[in-house]
Length: 140
Image (cartoon, rainbow, N blue to C red; front, side):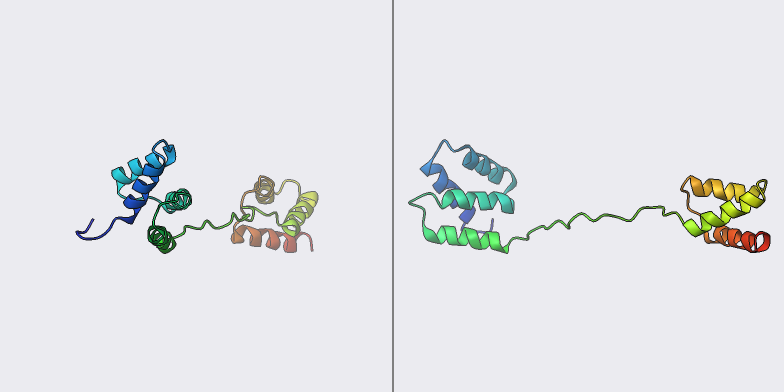
């Protein structure tokens, strides 16, 4: 800590400890503050709640502690979003493959692509174009 700067958090912790030496929360905060040299925003909010109940603590210490808390960054978690499914069946494409296989059940490439489609694997744009081309040639 720079020379000549007051340690408000330490003074508030000492005042809370003098008011109630058996308070485990204050003792825990004192230990953490000595070990790490800082407290989290949530811990400081808890300390402010405890310190505001102490009758003989100076108001200026509470105000400074509150100002310190307000200056700290608040981490906000983004709400969970529902992602879209990795695979969505292209039903018109599946119907085209079924129509081809109904007429030509031994068509190896369409059998392969239809199996891939049923396993919910992604068909590349080239494979989709193949199915459309086969459908145009064989069915229409």
